[in-house]
Image (cartoon, rainbow, N blue to C red; front, side, top):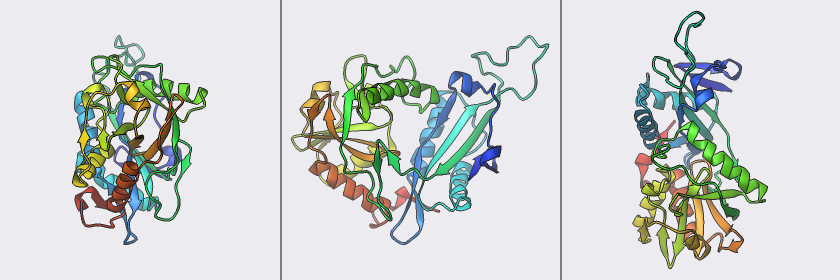
Length: 317
């Protein structure tokens, strides 16, 4: 495997960071998850690459990271990486992080591993690999339908989603995901596939690594960004597709009881793509439901290039 790191393509063995890297000690890294798909014509396209890179640079701005590469350079790196690794379907992981001091500091008064990262270099890397399994579900090859029709078992986590005034959920920050790790581990200990987190007001936010949708009386509902959920690219894509399919949508605050009484519910995200929720805290839901199936078919058609609609969402490699 070849990895892009700081402007160069290096082998897996050489793609390393120092043990005193600031991001390792303090979580000071931002990242993205992006997918590339094989299309109907036999080529490969990266799905909504521009939206992912825009979110990456938004995260950088929130964290006051001066990224040494442009979005165009990172876009080219993603495309070249797929070619070099001969991947026609892949998950890509760009990460930008605060690195270790470039010179030893013995004898100096400044602690180069303090919380304050001022003056430390900014590094970046992009990896790409086949990620065909998430939440215990597998894809079918070739040209599989995105996501899965296997319903997942969920619990509402006892861990609360981080608050906007604690850590900004609008930024896809490595440190934020410790919150998700705790929730995911709790779910696994409860023999569930995934956890659903509430905010401090008791409203639904998202899963440990996915946005969430609820269907009630034919209407597609998803929590507002102000609830504390990540501004998901797949979330945005599904809302756009739903409106174009004349499916009513809304973004209201959702108490946990709306999960229990939903006609159907599902997760969305780059890694999970789409996954129907079979149960929440032991309450059974219809999985997969008709709205899920309609949206999944529409998303698959777009991703696979089986329509000329939304062509701007596909970036040929």
